[in-house]
Length: 605
Image 1 (cartoon, one colour):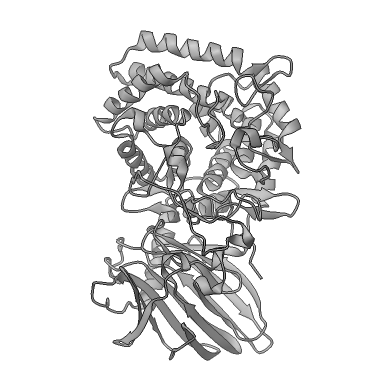
Image 2 (tube, helix red, strand yellow; image 1 turned 120 degrees about the vertical axis):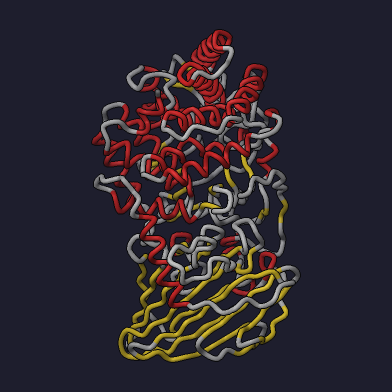
């Protein structure tokens, strides 16, 4: 039986990440990077597509947790005969401050099994299938290790127990008594290189635990939701590709926005539009180095012809993310097709230009201003906005229907011009301020005339439509209109009346198939629900904001993780998991509800 999305937990090493299921199986892992081919793809198929399971042979009850302030997962198995625990983790690559774990090791997964009480019979089963479950490797033994090779990829397995091969699977059976420990480690290396030396699993565990705790200790948030904020920050750090500072939207692909549907996207990439929210979540929580690395990644993505700016890039800034369908994976609970890549990289989305200019302006305001060449890049963005702001686009939600004049896209064009003016005025950068001021006024006038439905007292999804969109919740947060403006209040009221399901917010109307070009149906969008809580805070409705925030906290799984969406009817998570944007929303809303000057108020300018 397929596990629910929320039955998984995350482990990672700031290069890639794995999902560990409640039944003790690692069902998703891409090596050596987030966007590499998966060697375990059972998440989107069957066990035969690759997994690594360690669990009791008899029926057992599992409970799990993270070691405090770390990404070390502890699963405790209780059987009638005894109790064991499994600690799953990935040693941090390239960052070894304690000196015991080799700093240059490749990505590895380690699993430490310890007997706590009585005796428990255990089973280990390793099925390696490279290239998203399609390639069976050649397996051999060398220097006390199991070695699996297919094309450019190689994995090694070392363990404290004897293993055997059977039916293209590596297996082991062992029994643990109280106090006994069995260690397993699995690592990747290029197949053209020699087998790497063995790693000291105990030293790696100690170093990894210490590394995460030292990192978590930098958090400066001291509000009532500190533990929740720290867990989301750790998740965000785990989704950071350390060599470049890029933050992937999620470590997974293909997890559906509707079970059995076609809305199954590859999210193992970095979206520019997340930039400003992400900067705030890191800077306000005390993580300047991470914020600077993310800012620099964004600045590198800006380089080049402004007309060719993409909305999404690979973890190192790769531009070509061609989308293909892979037929051999049936998809999560039959949700197909399974796609690699993301065709949205070819879309024109106007809002991302404003998002970039806003991110760079806010970075300057918070003391992490860009390098000397960044303003020149921003001037190129402004040149494009001046000539292209009035073009239709695919919108924030990457609509696959015809381009339209989306209100949110025009809003972010206004934001871009506004932030360019403020950067020039406040930081003495050269610019055509008078012309930009005229453009800013023109865009605002058009939005208020063409994007506002005066009969319903609400802004609408696109010019001339009667539909709503949760992205309109950005209008007060970016300073387009004050929170007390009757048009903002009317828009919030309309969203409360038409886009809410079980107290949570949909992205847009469920009958929008003609707009997004896809069959209707998806869950509520968690980031949008955090935005509504932020609006409550700005509008002086703090008690309602707190209640909504607590409701969102209650949707997390047992180890504090959130997906992209949630099904309020089936009461289960939907979409790729864990989702960076959901956790960024949690961090920022906690700040908005806790502090005298919140990030939402600061962003208004």
